[in-house]
Amino acid sequence: MYVFTSLLAGLVFGLGLIVSGMANPAKVLGFLDLAGRWDPSLGLVMAGAIGVGIISFAVAKRRMQSFLGAEMKLPKARDVDRRLVGGGLLFGIGWGVAGFCPGPALVALGMGETKAIVFVVAMVAGMGIFELLERRSAARQATAA
Image (cartoon, rainbow, N blue to C red):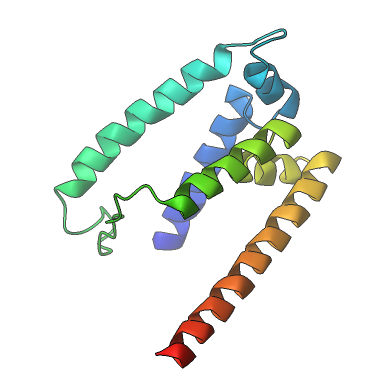
């Protein structure tokens, strides 16, 4: 049941990204181009997503288990630190340059968009580099202690 539900959620999410235009880099870049031919339509998509997220987290906070019986694992961190700000900046720069963020890039990759191939390869490389740096940092901290 978990695999089926995950597949269904992924299909609905991917379809939503396609219908909303989030998988179209030209549409995203039009939204981000405040000084040029600005296209505000993705703002409505984002407002809708924020609304759904607020309601979903409010419901999830009151539950001990998910609807499928898994343990609820909500984020506990509330601090705004250098890593969070740096990650947000890096995300925003990548989104503004490529017109993709991770979810829509995977959808566009599935649609055969060439630009998405480059983005996803760079994204996976970035995740690998981050993981390598995190492991090195943890190893250094373990030997220092």
